Length: 126
Image (cartoon, rainbow, N blue to C red):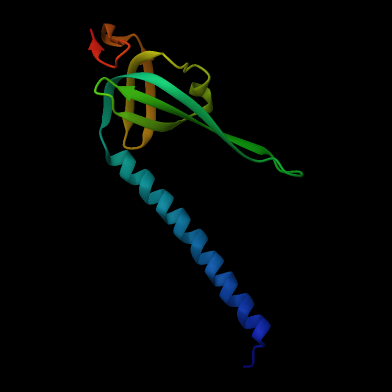
């Protein structure tokens, strides 16, 4: 069977794109499974920053927004997590409470639990 050079290039590019998409889906599923196996960790924290990432919206496509919140723990360590749209609007810089996360997944943020607060220098006050 004879294939032209153009057809060969097409099939190679198609196979490469298909393999890349398959790899990305596999990596996402593997990361989510790994996160779900981690314990849920509740820890006192303060909201120190928020940001959004917007993509799409050109032509007839819809714009998509992802919200990220940076939490700071009493020891000064920070963790940025993607937060669902339904929660992002309720988190304000300076809020203190208990962050629950699982691996790299945001689970919840409960203000005022355990009577915990963080003072201005990041140390725990209870």
